[in-house]
Amino acid sequence: MQVAQLDAALSEIAVDPTDVKPHATASAQRDYQHSGVRIVFYATALGSILIVTCVEAD
Image 1 (cartoon, rainbow, N blue to C red):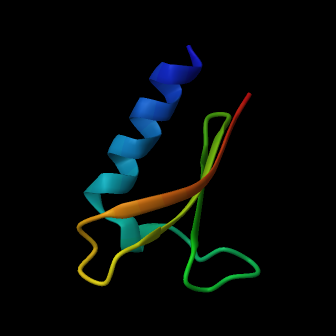
Image 2 (cartoon, helix red, strand yellow):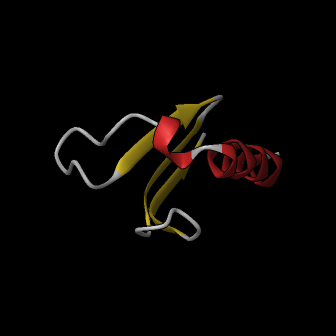
Image 3 (cartoon, helix red, strand yellow):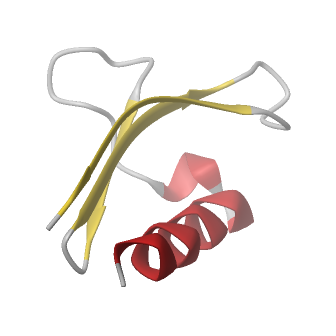
């Protein structure tokens, strides 16, 4: 179940990573939270690669 939630979350982020709110303490990072999944990441300059720094799942 957690893997399916994580896969869905990563798919949503991939559509438009700039649409995700900035992280509270690091403006270059983004903080995505939805359906028991939290992913903290940043995108490369062109937005083609996401570097995930933290994943939490309920």
